[in-house]
Image 1 (spheres, rainbow, N blue to C red):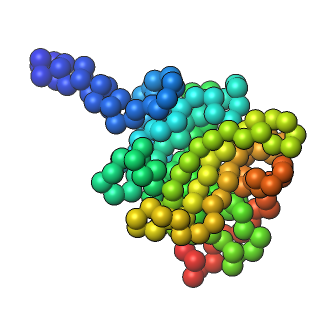
Image 2: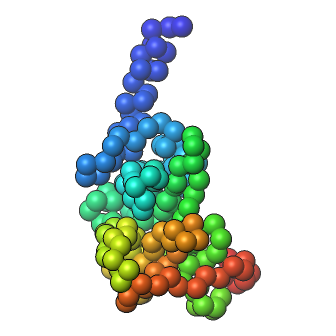
Length: 190
């Protein structure tokens, strides 16, 4: 093997890690997590959260594809987002956001297909909230946004529901998960 190839093999992981930088005091993101993020949402993916987000015994990673030339930290706007959960050595998508917000079992927060929320851009925020049952939960706030990153519709709040084992839309007014739609999108909405 040539010296140039050896050097490339040594430098490549460092270059990949720079694209997937953790925020706050998170553990470093490993190669398998980075590969799963790229497979899920494309080559522009960056991992913005990693660790025990919704459960103390479950590794999760949130990867996004930012919107425009500004960094995610500046505008917090995305065209795509995925929440990956680790099962043994595999990562699976537990929540995806592109034009529609959905978990693997249904579309979030719509009581009818006519009310299905769609946006090309979402503003994203993360926080912990104590609900009426006294438990702190990790919440993802997704707000449809215009091209400038300003709110263009009501926010959708999503949290892990341990009773059903998936992310669902949650009401911040007390404790309760919203109903889900389990039907495919109609042809006109695709």
